[in-house]
Image 1: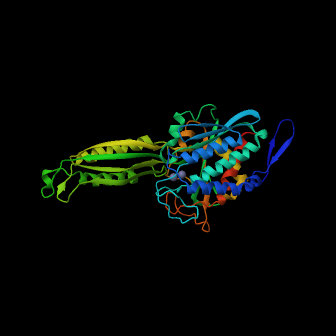
Image 2 (image 1 turned 30 degrees about the vertical axis):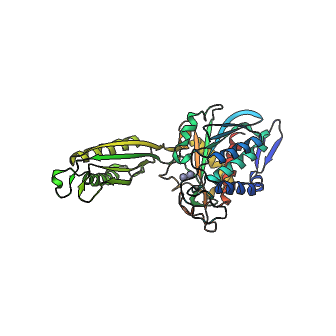
Image 3 (image 1 turned 90 degrees about the horizontal axis):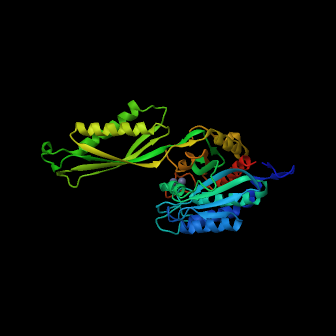
Length: 401
Ligand SMILES: [Zn+2]
Ligand SMILES: [Zn+2]
């Protein structure tokens, strides 16, 4: 695949992105393995961000910190034009690695189990490639290396000015994705990742003796009815064409088999792949309060926003779709069954600036990279790094021509 970019005058420069990325593949893999060996938790990516900063400075980009460990590199093309931001995430997870890879994590209890090691490496290589072609770029490329994706780092970087000086016209994000085979790309316009709100529901009754439950008010009983009510909401009230998930993942109450506890706590998340999430939360709250009241209990609900809806902009999706056709061919672009109820805080950028987010397949039996994300055996297929780097470079080339 060859891309044409028109430089000053009538001279036509032909940039073979695939070939140039292939020439840098060994470096990209070695960067990835180094990041993998030295994972760092969100907000603590000290070593990682220093390597990123030094690498971008060496390329000659304008580099600045945005939060302690978030890094931004700015590449000015030779001509004035639009501004595109490419975002990747750099943090690892509190998981003990069980892969037995020769470059497995050297840090006990910390692991790159989501592929952000690969993201960081390929983002650096994309920066290197595009810097070589500064002359052909009409506009500006911002490389944003985001801290703490696993827990809302995007918002911190935005508060620290990530979307200013310069302000991007478009933002672009991606994830190496183990549910999709290597060589394929998943991309859809509209919602691609769900919004998520975490809740903590505290149900209060009145403690007493387990042998005389009629003299107490048992909040555990009310909790059981709340679980039933949640199932009813799913089946009878929520529009089944608009995916909604309420899942309770933690429940705690009581200290001993003969004591009715005063209170029970339930924690979980509410996820929506549509824009009516506020109505879902409000109905959930109404049901919890009414059910608790029916069983003589009271309740409090605290919500915390995990991620907002990641909703791909139509025009930006078209841009990425064109790039994907050149990189993997039309037959390897998945447009059905791509969206998921998981979230990514890339949504914080793309709800402020038109944006697109896509999945780059990384599953391969031979690379043992079919484990789900956040599993202690998770691994990426390193062949997918080049696919993602090509995608990013192609999107920029098309947008800044
Ligand atoms: Zn993750
Ligand atoms: Zn991730």
